[in-house]
Image 1 (cartoon, rainbow, N blue to C red):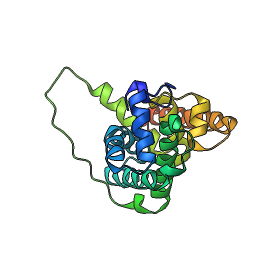
Image 2 (tube, rainbow, N blue to C red):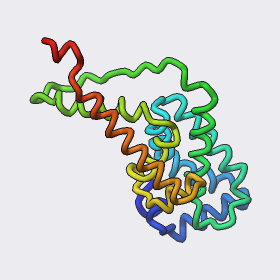
Image 3 (tube, helix red, strand yellow):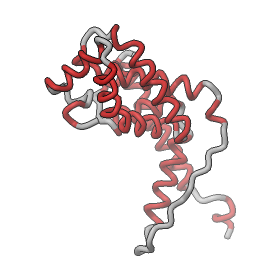
Image 4 (cartoon, rainbow, N blue to C red):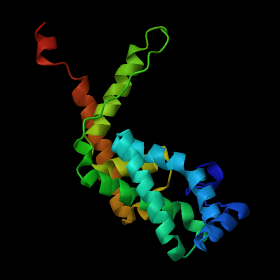
Length: 195
């Protein structure tokens, strides 16, 4: 989703608004164009929260199905992006709770050209990934919406369908949990201390 049409920007182009209205009226071609515009951004958010490519794809597919089904009930077409993110968060939550998250996930590693020692960068990425994996789905969602998408606390709360205070609390506890996880990873193990 480009900057002009992100929920955080508050702007929707006239052309896009016309496309949203046409899709709302049941024009499939307009909906297909909207879906093509948003699918990559939806997938990035779902992948960040769910940490599984296949489950993220399922969540995005379910989001688009719900969008097509429920779009005629959307009251304000200018708020399409926030409404769509709310549908995505619900689909992510449903996918997470469905138990499919217990499937084994295999990540193929790319061989990258050798560069000067980047082990510190890799270690940081791995520590962040482990810390993020320890968060609840609610905490992951608020971190992704606030820090990755750059939504305000108010927009994050609206997207999640929770009060602003709850969003603020979840963000606080999520960042605190990440800090604790990162500090725990940084502590030497018993074997390292005794060596």
